[in-house]
Image (cartoon, rainbow, N blue to C red; front, top):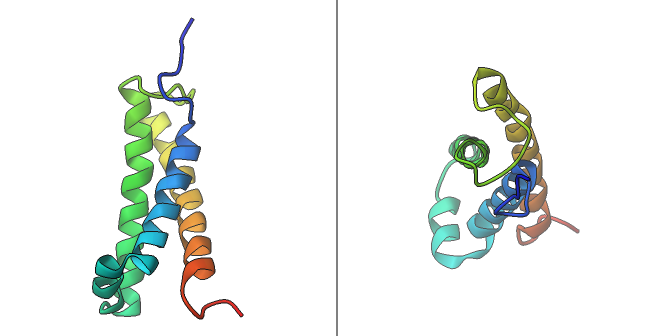
Length: 105
């Protein structure tokens, strides 16, 4: 019986990481101050890179056995990172829109 040491899927970990990234860049004063100084294009590029790292990290956790995602630890499995990344970007941008001061309303 293969017990999952962390009872979360790669998708769940990716979504949590992407949401925390967006919230941190909008709400934590030290991080938000640095993030706000970036150009809009730089912000988008940084978030794309960080959400890609979150997706790769979640898949890597699966490869070392910390998650039981059902994804193979080969080229086919890592192709699933693209879908994880798209989920991460969606969660990240939704969280940003909902938490950025003055963005909703």
